Amino acid sequence: MKKSDIKILLVDDEPDILEIVGYNLSSEGYQVITAENGQEGVKKAKKEKPQLIILDVMMPEMDGIEACELIRKNPDLQNTLIVFLTARGEDYSQVAGFDAGADDYITKPIKPKVLVSKVKALLRRFREEDVADSVKIGSLEINRDEYKITSKGKEIVLPRKEFELLSLLASKPGKVFKRDEILDAVWGNEVVVGGRTIDVHIRKLREKIGDDSFKTIKGVGYKFVD
Amino acid sequence: MKKSDIKILLVDDEPDILEIVGYNLSSEGYQVITAENGQEGVKKAKKEKPQLIILDVMMPEMDGIEACELIRKNPDLQNTLIVFLTARGEDYSQVAGFDAGADDYITKPIKPKVLVSKVKALLRRFREEDVADSVKIGSLEINRDEYKITSKGKEIVLPRKEFELLSLLASKPGKVFKRDEILDAVWGNEVVVGGRTIDVHIRKLREKIGDDSFKTIKGVGYKFVD
DNA sequence: AATCAATTGCAAAATTTATACCAAAAAATG
DNA sequence: CATTTTTTGGTATAAATTTTGCAATTGATT
Image (cartoon, rainbow over all chains, first blue to last red; front, top):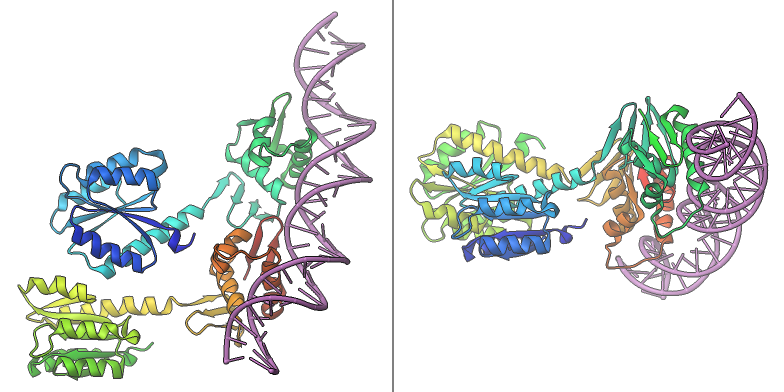
């Protein structure tokens, strides 16, 4: 994701803050969206789905804490980063803010450099978390990032489809995936492939990973067991 | 960078301050340069390019804020750290100072210990940021600043695109970058280039850096291995 | 238990797809 | 304008995916 693809929503009732913070973030290359109160903030958050939201705690009508809670209720915004702006000394707000689901807070008066570096740091973490899906299933380790699988210390390189199939099955060990489900997930339901195709791939996996790991449930599908 | 390579510029109209602060910093091993007023400070800043500048806010003729703004306008001094010296209670100066681009402030009366530790802390950050531009990946050293790559002691000069591509891949050794990702990062998704373009650049890199360093994951993308 | 129908396993072949490589054109650079 | 870098299209090659036909297995039914 490019920097200019990152949206930051800025919610504060003081236009001055909006301007200075907005300016600093814009000149760093981020897309900045602003809102002047809690309601508007929540609305824009839902609409724009920013990666990061900077929320003033003290605002008339709906304060930052409340807005934060509302935002967090939205499933699409679960992973959005939320940073609170608090006046120094409003100590309680840190606690309450973290309870409400904040990721960090910045105290006023705002130092542009601090703000920018904090935002950068958070977004770095965000990005890393985003890609860091390497799952361990018993003796298997599936590293989606590096596109490789480690089984009992041995690295196994798999072709795309086999890799996808294995990740799917191993994502829920024990669960039986119906053939339809598998086709949907691995092949996508646009492409129609014959019925035997899945078997073949399963066979390849059995050859490479181990025969016992894959159980056939006749008339239904396959499952991966550890 | 050695400590004795670090220059600190001290700007204050009071000779006493100059002396006491200067003495403390010198005995820490830093190179200290002094100036007795704003004009002189700005002039010396441009000439000496210190890593850190300590500026008194209250000075006759040109005050610290103004000097700071002038300094910041100089492209070479964008990353220079600027610390303000303010009398306690001059609260406005904090705000105005940060607006002008200051990184920190120290209130008078000056406590040498506080001063020194603050300077150290700031310079640590500065150094970290500074080196973050040249990354070492195994036998490779990528210097984004000077736009060159050192491999096994040999300097390799790369054209822009090849350089960008290599830095991308090497930034996360082992990670597979999908062709889309590569296009986004190196070419930017505004420009549309054909699919073979990436191959060709990879080939060039393989010729120059070494065949083994670049693995192809068919149907997915490429990765750099150390 | 034997039979039957349906389903899955399997191996090799066929097909499709992706990438490497090349040469040459186009664009940028100085 | 000469040189270097980047892009493109074409072809060769390698690899992955799918198909196919038959054998083996399973579960249900008698």
